[in-house]
Image (cartoon, rainbow, N blue to C red):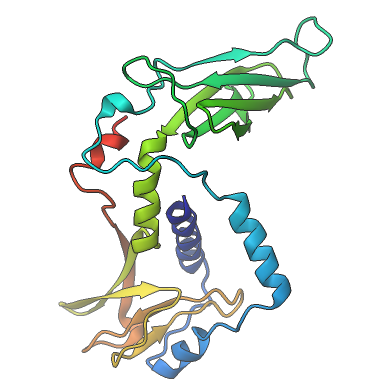
Length: 255
């Protein structure tokens, strides 16, 4: 999950970089060193950070070493949900809150006895081209609650994004490779081209860095300077997604 969040942040910076014209290049490595020396957090900021981290903390789930049998993981097709009765009875009306109880089963039809599944719930209306997310509560025993606001008539959908058995591998990948994606830029002069790595903050090395920080927004962006070309010779960006899983782990992420 954290890898996904960081990827979205990096992707946003990448888009901002390409959509703004106020970009400058510099071969002075000292500029990047100063920009990447982030100031220490205050006590208030540390408390806020801890609250945010606690709010997205995943529950402790049984550790399953690879290889993991797909039959022992959560199966969306065998799982089910029940719409709880409307408080006060009667039909559901626009403006109500709909509550759903979800029960997870594995591929052998056995009920799950622990939580940790990554579930997304939503109510959508194709005619209005609108949707609203439901709030999911993990009861840590294989059951989940989802609450929907009903702003208009529509169809509900519950999606199993990842079974609980897959989460430890995502957490391991997030710790080892938090970016999830590497960014590069191509530099060209005539028929000669070079490619270097880019990021919001690059590890300091002996190789100079080009500073492409957006002057109007302050968004940081740096690339290692190519050996034989100037920073002004940059012509494009591209990204390479890091493969988080080996062949034994990929079975947990089959659709």
